[in-house]
Image (cartoon, rainbow, N blue to C red):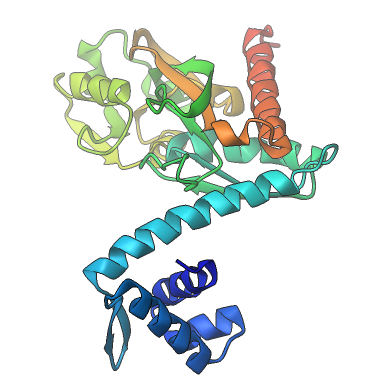
Length: 301
């Protein structure tokens, strides 16, 4: 198959329109149409259903689009590797992690990364869905479990536990529970056990709900749980790392905690020599080391 025709087909399939694809490729609509028709003739099949509102891929077109999409991502990866400078760190870096870790830990620390590497362009994708790194849905991931794919380089960064926090002013006003039974005298704030989250947090929330909890607030992400705690709504189930950046939090029932959640950084084998990946990895490790120093430092009164 002709590479140029495949490139044009991919643009048409992606845009769903000959006109829009032509604009992207700087070609006329007729030129795009001729190339697509020639590709269909060479394959002896129809790739698009044509109708007034645009183009829809046929079953055969879907198969070919899956292949060109994979090719496109591999070409993007090769291009990124070629662009990586021997001495400088610049360009696009797509980072994916969970909504909680990304919003509560990673995003507040990014100014330190930009200070060292102002020419980086970070695309931060926060979602619970695990993006496919070998298929280049992202360049690097921070995940709450060890990746299972064999063609990924992974490094364990730290472990996290889900614990119980209240604000200082809440404790001053309402006191802190002395045991699980007395937790029922307070409003519990947590992610719903039915929401997408790490299994350890899900199990702890479900266990706490078996207590005689009279007032409950469930939120579908940890950022919302933290806001509820800071606004004195009750006692929240949160990752232990939030305390480093939020001195107004008080740990309650310190014996109540989830099992350890391992946190891994992972990226595709083909980006092993990427300067951008190395810079991001070193930045994350440095920030974790700084957090440990802060946690170990004596509290000044």
